[in-house]
Image (cartoon, rainbow over all chains, first blue to last red; front, top):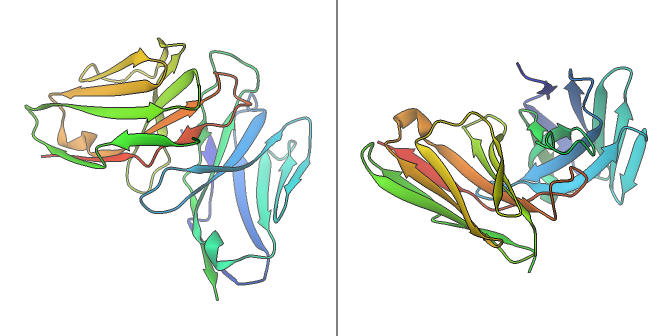
Length: 115
Length: 114
C-alpha cells in the first residue's frame, strides 16, 4: 500500500522554465511534508518542507504548495537549472507525533533539465 | 561538520557471511536511522535509535541486527542474508525524533548478497 505516490516517474524540462513535481498521499494523519533530492551515488538531501497549517512555503527557487483537501502537494522550481537534474522524493510524516515520526517516501520523479 | 558517513561504500557477501555496515555523524544528533532502498523504489525505514536506544523496529528480520554503541555511531550487523536483501542501505540522523527536524542522509552502502 503506497501511502505517498508520485505518479510521474520522469519529467524533462527546458533550462530556465518551471519544473512542477507532483505528489499525492492517502493517509489523512500525515501533516508534515518534505521534498528530498537525490543524485546518483549520494543519499537524499533535504530540500524544503511544509506543515499542514500552511498551504505554501517558499525558499529561493523552490516553492512547495499543499492542498490538504485534495491530499496533494507540488514542488515548483523556477527557473530550472541543469544542476537540478536529480531524482526528487516526496516524503510525509505525522508532525509532533513521537513514536510515529517515520518518513514515508514516494517512489520518486527523475527530473532532467535540458540545456 | 554536517556530514553523515557510511562505510563501506560497496559490499558483496555470501549468504553464510557475517558483515557489518557502519554509520557515523558528528553533528550531535541524537536520533539515527537505517533505511533500505531497492532499485527504483523509495527508501523504507528499518530502525530508529533515539538517545542510543532502539525506538522503532519496522518488523525487520532478525538477520539484520542494529547497534548504537554511542551517540555518533550506528552499526548494522548482517548475518545469513538472502539475495533479496541486496539493496542500498542508507543511514540518516536528525537532531532528535521530532519529525520537524530534517534528516541528514549518508551516501549509502550498496550491498550485494550472492
